[in-house]
Amino acid sequence: MTRVALPSKGPLLSGKGWTAFFIALIAVCALAPVLNLLVPAGSQLHMSDYAVALVGKIMCYAICALAMDLIWGYTGILSLGHGLFFALGGYMMGMYLMRQIGRDGNYKSELPDFMVFLDWKTLPWHWSLSDSFVATLILIVAVPGLIAFVFGFFAFRSRIKGVYFSIITQAMTFAAMLLFFRNETGFGGNNGFTDFKRILGVPIATQEMRMTLFALTGLTLLGFFLFARWLIGSKFGRVLQAIRDAESRVMFSGYNPLPYKLTIWVISAIMCGVAGALYVPQVGIINPGEMSAANSIEIAIWAAVGGRATLIGPILGAFIVNGAKSWLTVAYPEYWLYFLGALFIAVTLFLPNGIVGLVKKWAAREKAPASEGRREAQRAMAAEQGVEPSALAPLVVEAKGARA
Image 1 (cartoon, rainbow, N blue to C red):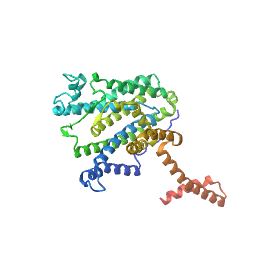
Image 2 (cartoon, one colour):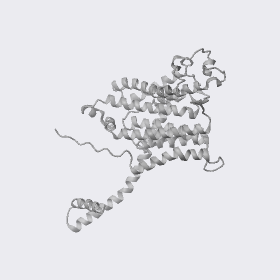
Image 3 (cartoon, one colour):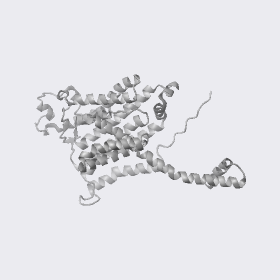
Image 4 (cartoon, rainbow, N blue to C red):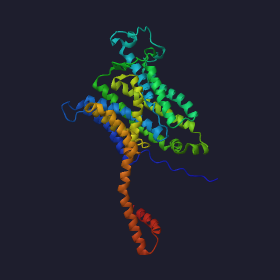
């Protein structure tokens, strides 16, 4: 029996990649805190509280875009319902933050204000663990992961894929949004959760706490990026890409796609849940609007604009699109949705590989003349010596090795 040698596993990041990673790490953990906390507000180098909140929010979105790339870019599963998992993580954190208000609310009650307004006397059963930070951290991972597991198991076992899967995920998110809008579910209804006071007993509105949340979000994003790089470079990641390219051939090769698709689906949902939990204390509100279909579609747009199956592309896409959104919604609020639609159409028609794909294409064009010049030199040398150009290739390689 013939054995096929698998390609050797490369490094997690290249030299330039590690350099960029540590630059980002320093910017998040050292540069931004110094510019915000130590540089005077009147200085041009000062990083305002608004900028801290904006960049922190976009980093949460970037985690969602990275999660989308794992399932769409590398597995070929387009989800239009990841806003649900983002919101679920946010609601788990929001429940804890509402309990942290204590008697500082408008009604001076141990119950959240919206429960007092609805004349509730006790907490619902699903709020029983909301006063524990450790339990909240577990629920942030467990709730999105469990719902994703149940949904994904039945969907993937039924071999639902393509546009049908996308529509079902969107329907699931819309149904959850309608459920959370109802007051009797105990999630604040249309208004959701807001007016947070503290986290772990520390006031949440202080400059130091905002910067702590900012740094924690940046570290989480960088950690998830390294995890995604490791996952995609493993055998598991190669199977995911094979499923994306030819799922039938993967089945004929003896692999069952179900556990692979289900695992990456759950991992992606958990990443979005963690992003939602980091998003809520920085923005200060969570409501069912986060589950809207438009929000889930935007996550896919970030991945498409940056470049699918690149990992770094969706992160860049999240920053570019949301940076433009923050400017356009202030300068030209009535044109923002038109810009978003035009951007998605333009990327689909002219940039199928996104911005990162375009940069790679330009880099390949710059390298092409140099490669062609080397081939011309080999042909000229071969003509002088009266041999075939291919016969000189080993000599060129040997010469390069000798110089090295």
